[in-house]
Image (cartoon, rainbow, N blue to C red; front, side):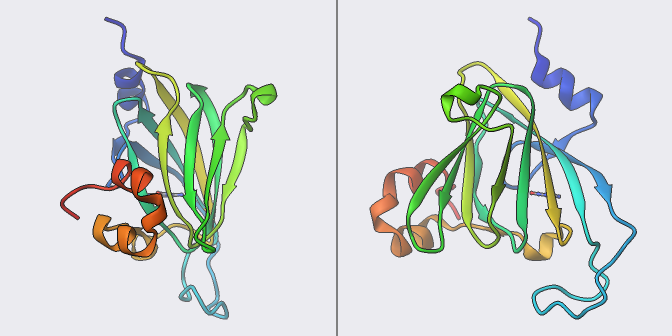
Length: 168
Ligand code: GUN
């Protein structure tokens, strides 16, 4: 059977991401922060970009980073980006090309926001890009623990159980 997800993993040399899905870094700016920014250390690259692939059988589990992250839709199904905002409210963003259907081909996830992602169409996949500035570093990357999230946001228990790993 023709499997575009496997083909893309091979063609783009994608690796498994700790949050779920597959990625490869495509850009890391030469330019670096000078250290005047409180949140980020001197020497941090100014900007980075990745390809990110999620299958309908994958989940991007709840996580957060310290930069705004811009998402770009390239190919395949639309996706739903599930946010638990800093004010504690849940919000869904729809990344895709059907503009009449609330979807946008570019979206921004604000810094320090818990978020996870699901693919909208069954038996499908979605190829996206994610760009961040200041640039990505796994030091800033935090996976959400299920227990910690349920304690903090009991009103969102259903989506938390869906988008966290039981063992974390
Ligand atoms: N590089 C490695 N992982 C990530 C990620 O989750 N987002 C971005 N933007 N870059 C990364």
